Length: 426
Image (cartoon, rainbow, N blue to C red; front, side, top):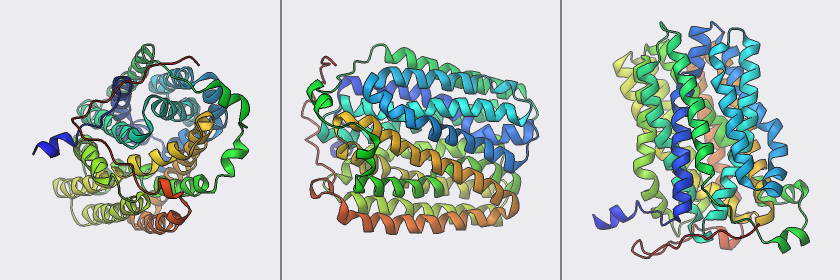
């Protein structure tokens, strides 16, 4: 029992814990809004499912466009001001969503939010890498998943209690709460130091996107993540309208579905991260889409054969399985990107890596929304085929990963103290 309890200790510096606290607040706001965004656009504002899917996809497209600028800004200005700027733009984008009455309103605001998100991910990931010792980065990115999902799960639960299609004003409350959490994270950043990088390194080594794109291992990881997001993460926002329209799953139950998914991640993420120490990264990554295949096919069958509470219970099991799969991404994939990226180029690496989320986040909801409107029960088997391809690519990529990075580093005993990272000039 003691060993199991110790597995929850990621052995990270206090500054990383503080950064993740801000992440909890931020993700709580996202959890309040994201499960109900398509429902708001489709059922409250009367937009078609295809248009609503395109609105969600536009956020990802904004990330792609602005993400090209985000990497150099992170490397030159530092991750903290870029992160604060991205959070502010997201607050503006979602905070004004109650004013949406025409599709172009939604497209404009979600593009602003997407541009802010483009600055969020590379800056936050770079700051985590700077604040965390190299041997504990896999645990830091696992903790990042825990805090994000804890906030999203609680937010989805609260959002399900607030949102009601019959009361459009309830959605205004959701968007205001979300905007407030972005600004709360900005306040947390004022007390978090940035250790910076060695000045001599930034002056003597080339800093450009061409260096990033010549890294074959990174390009392979980028392609792999594109498949993960297209067939997995990006389709999550299509689960609520799928369940509601075809099995009469209620808004309250939709909130519970997101809470169950994220609660599973919160409970098992850190023990899984500890169990993966010393094991092969790419095999862990292959297991993730394999579990997602089971989840998507179970969801498809549950909604097809059952209704209301029965469909909800099957969907809950499916999203719990999906959540277990998600736990492999942070310690196996995200940490590997941080490890292969040179310190002075980490902002650019994470910016390009974010493009895989942005592009796939555009393709997934856009294509998925139209498939959902055309042949709703074909969407999840098609996603499963892409997941199968992702598992094969993950295994094939292992031989290209440098030998020293093929296994997740082993941690020290949980009883050993973890020293904080003192800020340095730069």
